[in-house]
Length: 366
Image (cartoon, rainbow, N blue to C red):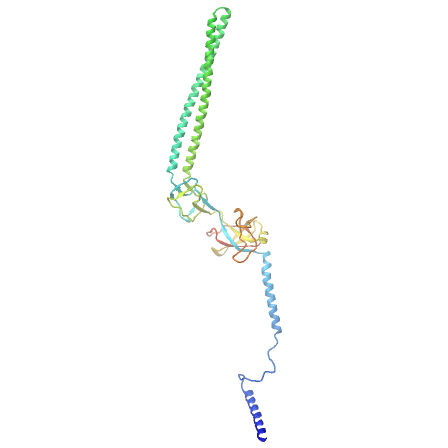
């Protein structure tokens, strides 16, 4: 019994010595005794501050999103535009010479290209010959008309003379101073004179028809000659506007068809910017409003502009009439709100090159 009690006493004293050693070790020691008190302060104040920060940030975001749209109108969906003039020949023919190069600046009336004029020149010569022949025939008929008119005057004079002879002889016959046979001859002479007048008048009527016909032929020949000369002049293609030749692929030897464009010119006097704004923004924009334009071709510069007008219609579907512009309301994966086109013009025109179709951004204060 004593041995067992001594063993228990020694075991207890050994555990006490181990706990004492663990207690005396530094802060890096590991204690098997769980802490009795948690020194960490309560976190209720930090949580409240975090919630307030989140609420304030959300309010700022909402303010920046909803309030400025009533004061500032901005869109990056804009592009530079001008008039693109398609030059098409009015006659068909083989291109003889191209007088411009790609991207060349041209002025109104500058020669662009020339079609082979030989065939058209031959047509002019042929029509000129026809006109000369018709004019000569008309001249002959007109001369005949003058001759017939003179003959008619002579025939009328003969009738007058015959009538005078008839009257004189009739008086003598009544007085018994002349025979009836003489009166009969006088009657015959008067009738012959009248018949001659009738014949000349008939020939004059026929001649008048011939003169009218030949004059009509002259008029037709003149019109054909004018048309041939016009076609010959149309073998020279000139610039209708001042601008830049773009995407030129025309070469000598190509066959040009009438009405088919062969040269394109970007008009250098009709520059403007078309901006697509959301409906509720575009509806409040007034013509003449001031704006600022950022050109992606010349970044970090703002160019002053003013609103020309707001388009009053857009196509709902892409396959509708092309006279109505179509603004796609969707991107690759989201649907955007419907947008209307606002046209702006530079004021003044910028001193930098402009490019049709280039991207732009518009900022205004409606």
